[in-house]
Image (cartoon, rainbow, N blue to C red; front, side, top):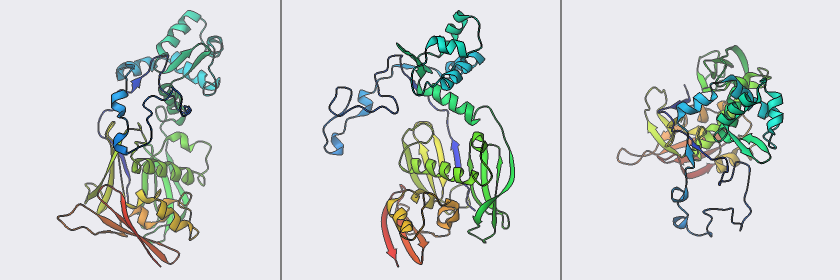
Length: 345
């Protein structure tokens, strides 16, 4: 049985808050090479010569978590954030008057007070108006995905494909913010992973598994690349033999050094973004980007995973990936890094 875990092991640190006049590039903006707007940029060279980001990093301000939640504990302030989205603040700043007209509040002084409570950390105020800072946009996203505000359940629904273990029919269900896909015949769970309830909106039972596949795959590929899918912090990856509370003999654990976000899965799941694995399958008519990952036993179980290290060596495993009558053998070391591939035709 394969069960993918996602958990946080500690309270996240408060996010760094910027001032209203930011000195760093915002998401989506790119500085042109050779301009002065590239702090820390150096000429290409050895990795040892790369600039130390910690040395140049400046915390402009820091908002304690309790104050951040207190600032959002007001209907008018949440309404202001929603109005920014509706008025197109993702594309261009929104004027004070346009915001005031959209929010249901008669007193402009009272409205200005609530807007000021958001400015600086959740909202940026500039000469042309107001726009989102990243934390404010995340709040709006959480509202519309239902992450913070909704609880939903979805009973059994059929899922295309067959069970890798017994070839039985698959079905899915959604309970406690988690979508699970398993076998209706033998009971094997292929994947169980948190999924925002907003993802159920405007999707049929036939469309939901595809969205779920991309969502989970994206999270694990990010983690395998060393980026936390929750806070973008640095992720450390290790192989674990006989992990606790798991039916797996060997698992991969990804742990964020910043927010302690934790992902655990089969070793095979980390190969979904591995170039040689992708090419091997593509050359045989299988697109791992779109084919549901739970269709492959090497991806959701360790049936094709073999430990190849000895007791006095760091943990190392080999996976056998069959496709089109051929087999790709992939060796992964204790950090989750592919160190060897062999094609058996």
